[in-house]
Length: 100
Length: 175
Image (cartoon, rainbow over all chains, first blue to last red; front, side):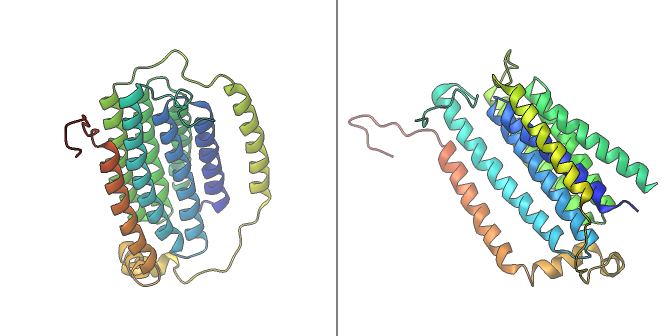
């Protein structure tokens, strides 16, 4: 029997990895992949807590998170295609059109 | 036995997560993310969430990640010389300090709370998919419908955004 804290710690490490990816990488698509890592960490946490507390709410929330991730990927990749078409840049520090 | 599987899935998912944020070639990052998603699905199976594990493999690894790889190859991105931010070391140090704090808080926490009705035995009796379906279409019906509208909006938004720009000459009729 694995204690729930083990899952929570794995999820915390995954979340921090994704956070570092968002902060550190320059490529926009890799930044979005790091966001997916963070969402996955949240999913692990939700499912672990659902099993620990004998409730199905966490698993259902996980399904909703997966749906949100699908929408986020679709819209984000459409945005990066538009930006790439106009400027030929996919690095987040080169996309500064709206920078004040 | 469960401990061995947990150690394997946890270790590989952490290692592939680190590879995803540190590899140079974007396509290799995508492949590492694919391995991460598969092993997280393994963690879900260990947690008796078989339906979520199947959805993770089918939708995450099968659809979302293919979308990422498709766009990566469409844009034909090359591996770059300078693929990190300029001051990335400061970010890593800051987040590392946050991690230490977070792990200390988590290790000190006792995870307790009111138990629900869905014990492992009760769920196994009717099957995980059926148990999720019963709860989702009764208690969570409104969020389910909202997710449907959200996905429709995302699809329409993605199509409108990625459409080629309309040609607008002085004489031409604007499409």
